[in-house]
Length: 352
Ligand code: GDD
Ligand code: MN
Image 1 (tube, rainbow, N blue to C red):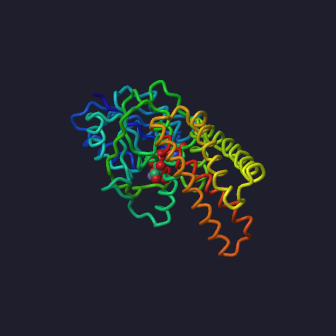
Image 2: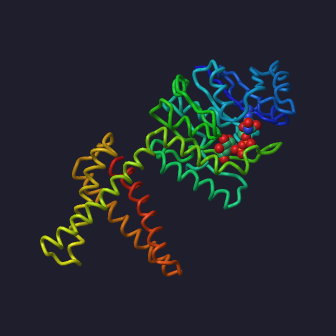
Image 3: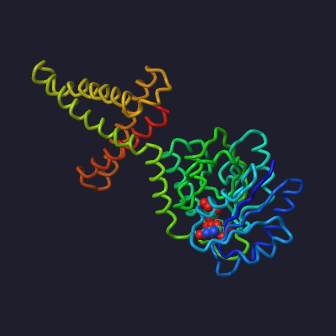
């Protein structure tokens, strides 16, 4: 088994020698190569890497035309000759001593092995609580929006290993900087394993991925949702939802006007008719490819989702009105949140 360690760099001159040295020690006994993909760093990282290639098995790619972290990693994949690829940062926030553990996981049958901050034993050094919160929140949003990565605790780690086959022939979008997210959604794999590690402090230099990252992350998740067809589902789910309103009104009218039922009570069977209508269309259309659970269980879960949505809707309405919001606006927000809750419940439970 040959290992290709892919390292994107931009102004990492000061970290390079220690990095190579620690990789060399960590990978003693392994057949490996290091591939540095540098975007023509002003500090001439590429030049130093070239010099160090006399001492270490390093191949240097100096890119002049292209820029960007993800596209650098993708370029690294193309240049790599190994059977297993390891991707890591150059700034020593990713301890090279973890690489053998990642490789062990692959040897034991994992297709992707992630050095993870968020499995037991993993952590982040020196982050303020709000940075942690943002990081965890962003990951939670990603996991809810993209069912394929639901089981992964740290899908945005920049430190991971994978079998060549996972990305071979897969078209990865170089936009955005969470390349692992891209791989986990589009790659060809069945087993992912996470190995805990401590995301340490940068040794030298500074981070290139600051401010704009949240927005760019949201855009990335959105693009992947579209790619996965999740956005189509969301659209279908809303169309079905609207059809439910018509069914609800129609039956309410019929129960009251033609059957003469009590107006206070007729609302209940009318709502049930709408729930049944929505269930049928979602089952036949929105989630038709995901009928893994038995029919009765799907039907039951769908009712649970409707109930949960109703409770959430009321709670948000009551909360906002209590704190002085106009009741019509509060209701609108309640409806919106309930919609999201029902979609996610159905996507992750009813049709999972
Ligand atoms: N070639 C190239 N081109 N390399 C780049 C570029 C670029 O445009 N931008 C950054 N790099 C290199 C850096 O030189 C470093 O080796 C690595 O990519 C990570 O960049 P940092 O600037 O150190 O990123 P970070 O520490 O803020 O973020 C890291 O942790 C995140 C998790 O919190 C990265 O690993 C992210 O991918 C990861 O999501
Ligand atoms: Mn870093």
